Image 1 (cartoon, rainbow, N blue to C red):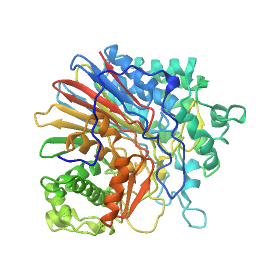
Image 2: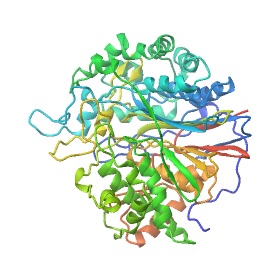
Image 3: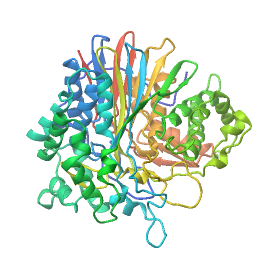
Image 4: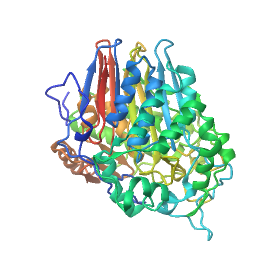
Length: 597
């Protein structure tokens, strides 16, 4: 089969952990505004992906966004920990060394595969709105809608953080090490100091122009000591974070959701500007959930992700629609156009129907029904025409449901993280976590940042019904889409996911198609040019000659192409087979892959 995407000449068979002072060049903040969901300029095409291989089931593997986090998780696996133990270690470290992307002040989704039980569980640690929240959550006193930047930096944007509760729920079912063990690496790094990475340092001057990170007293003292932003290579300690994690390790989640830490969270979110309505009761009553994954069986494998309010099913839908749209023996260009059109159809459905299923009747099964997907694939539209959402009710039951909700496309910024882990027993975790915008809403308490995830709700209360409208206790829609793929015999084949705002869905779909359809190596699967097609706009990453060629070919067909030198993906992928494990980390960020012997 012919591909526009590049083919690797060689694949490295080992990956030593790089020195922390020699990380990839910084990815700088380009914009944090209502016009763009992407807030960073990515690394140059000269960077290479981190790759690794391992003999399995006698070893394990971690692919994560920062070397400190990958090493912490690998050490836990080496000590006999479950993939869930390693996930807690990785994420608590990421909250320290990559605070612009995620942390314990935000939320997450986690897929866990238990190999011995052959069971997949979806854990939901998405933030919830306060009980006092209403559909007019972002309405100003005069009835107008608060602008994104103002809402982002306001206390009103913070939902109840869910990561810690999700850790505990997953650990209770899967953990092999004591609850305290996975926190040790982050506590040690916070106490003794870590080296500030170029990516973190690169964000700081830029974010000060758009947000209040340099104005919040705690954040300013930590990130801008003596009024100057931290620079790459600086060794930074965070004793408050070490104390917070030590308390959680000793006392359990109650240390976070009640008492002084909870009070600090409430005080920070109920202060000006734009004070929110988060209460101590909201934190004390928060509970993460666990349930079945959403799965779709293609002709060659089964793809699984987390249920809504995750948008993972849209990534699955893109793969399914691609399979229906691509012709037999396709040319390279036909593969690309099939992917573009599959994205546009899937995004339209996602914007119409996805929300919190506890509050709205979300047609998850219908959206992945093969008969409905086939009908969507038959829809014809011009390259410069925006496809509308489909109507699964009309297609499947002659009972239209399109009018149930109005379409919704809120701003979603791209500061998120993803990591993939497989332990020595073949158990796996795909976890995507976020504080939403870069550095969340800039409020720094007890050594960590708070999220602004409630801006993922529709902010404009226009009188129409929206699946993603804010409500008391409701979880906002998320683009986070951790995915696992399984072979027809039920064995684990692939673990993947990415950060990137609403572009996550396209990034994850690309990694699935690259690894499962286009016969690309792990390196190529994460490094291949990103294409994000939503509405009429088709963004093409043109940092490489391959990307430039794709953009030229699509434009010649009439697609409204927007060329981007870089995209903000952070795909962390592990592939499993009878021969062993192999993996790669997206070169656009600072991630690495570590094989555990």
